[in-house]
Amino acid sequence: MDLLLKETSKIIKQSNFTIAFTGAGISVESGIPPFRGGHGLWNKYDPQVLDLSYFLNNAEHCWTYIREIFYDFFADAKPNDAHRVLAKMESNNLLNAVVTQNIDNLHYEAGSKTVYEFHGNSKKLKCLKCGKVYDAKDIDFANIPPKCNNDGEILKPDFIFFGEGIPHDAYADSFASAEKAEVCIIVGSTGEVTPASYVPRTAKQAGATIIEINPEETIFTSAITDIHLKGKAAEILNQLDELLF
Ligand code: NAD
Image 1: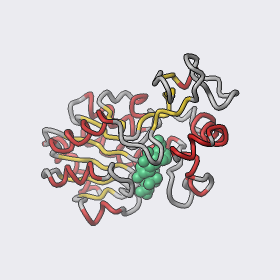
Image 2: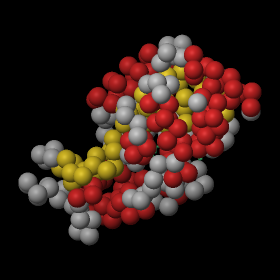
Image 3: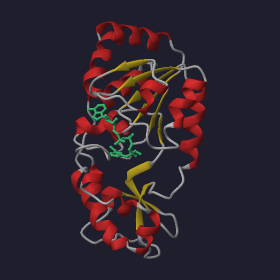
Image 4: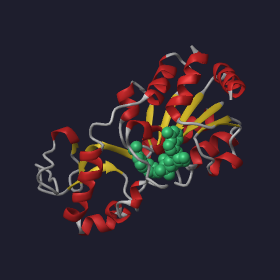
């Protein structure tokens, strides 16, 4: 592992354009479980509550669970060392962008500036009628479903539900950065969610070296990964931090 880490830090230092592609795994050490796997959220909750057409017809029912998952449990989650090392790499010109599938805002909270949120962000809510955007911290979740103060329409968390498209700018920026990447660091993603998983695949096709940080093997590992750093995100990125700076 020491040799692999040294090799990785050398590759990152030599790269002219590096991106990170992050999934639920990077936030596990912040206390947010992933969706899939033994302790995954979908073992406890019905994914239907995040299905757009079901939500539109059953907003109050869905909001009971949405509040519990995203605004009770995860409200106090803080960035961990993995988020912090990526932010430090960016501020030292060793990382150009983070493409994240996560909706937890933790990359921004850690200090990252160029973050493409492929699936949106749970810290904002949007009116389904007029499009007005609200900060989650200004919402009184005692009364659900929360409603727009312009038109009384139901608010929806501003992350994408099953059945919704990817936000246009995040999609375009993510793929543009993948095309330019000389190195792509995948952190904590199964690679099972499309079209997000096409981002590192695009980087690979464009010639990037793919570094993967994950305690498990994933769909990416045998297909596109050049170096698999097997371990937890914060642990591995802390070790890289020591070699990079
Ligand atoms: P996933 O839930 O499918 O898989 C998580 C991956 O993280 C697995 O490969 C697992 O081995 C790995 N992992 C677990 N602990 C880890 C650790 N400590 N360090 C590094 N890796 C670790 O995640 P996904 O591929 O990102 O896709 C799920 C979808 O769920 C995404 O679209 C995302 O939007 C959403 N999601 C987001 C959050 C969040 O915002 N924090 C949480 C759960 C799910």
